[in-house]
Length: 133
Image 1 (cartoon, one colour):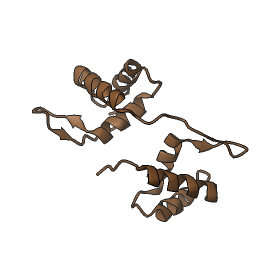
Image 2 (cartoon, helix red, strand yellow; image 1 turned 30 degrees about the vertical axis):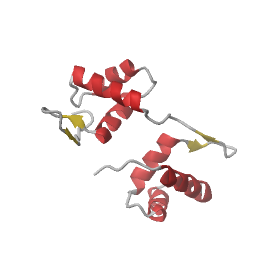
Image 3 (cartoon, helix red, strand yellow; image 1 turned 120 degrees about the vertical axis):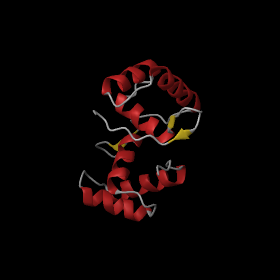
């Protein structure tokens, strides 16, 4: 089950990352995941850190992406219904381009997986699609 990150959890992640100054070592990110105490894996924590931003030389934190908004999510749902994408990277890149927000096809696919896909009858269920096949 995919659970959205909350604001308090993100703030705790920022504080732990500043405190520990992790690099790309899996054990460092696993330690941060354990300190969060939310049951997330080290890989999931690292991935979310990369989405939020990273610490630049000199300690400046920069945001890499802006959070998804309701209007953008509705546009994603509409585009996905129109195009009925599968696991093809080019299909998700086309949807990302149509959104016009600068997101990558992979980021759009990942968010679609979090939102769930619309099944016949309007029932929303989680859809896991393997990237590239």
